[in-house]
Image 1 (tube, rainbow, N blue to C red):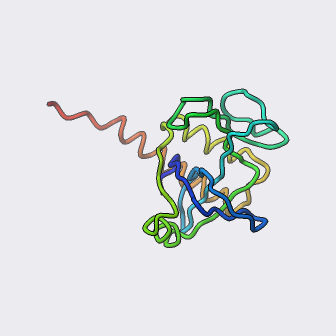
Image 2 (cartoon, rainbow, N blue to C red):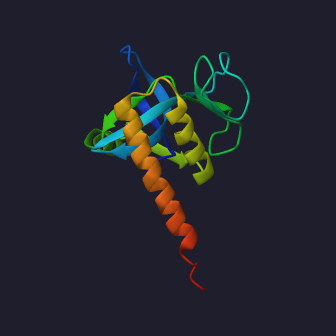
Length: 152
């Protein structure tokens, strides 16, 4: 799944086994695994500063209202990471449990991925997924910037 993709999981299962409808953000895919993080619009425990807050007690990336397809101020939680097998995501998409709702801009996606890498809560395996995805993401952006647009 492309980094920066926002999607709704109607039956998201938290690490403690609870289940709820959540908006998730993809941080990248490698070796058949997609790494995602959850979001919240309940900002009681977060600062309202836009962008990366990796040094906060609860590391996060704050997306201000209307900076993307989300209509509320939203915090991307960088203190818990979730791995999905790609086949599982595809199956859940076709069953209607998971639906894409939008994509962050390239600039926000790259900043979010860099912020995730600065979080102390990310494991070595998850770091490798994000680093690989970030490298591919940057290479694709550089290629897009070098490709001249076709004349109409």
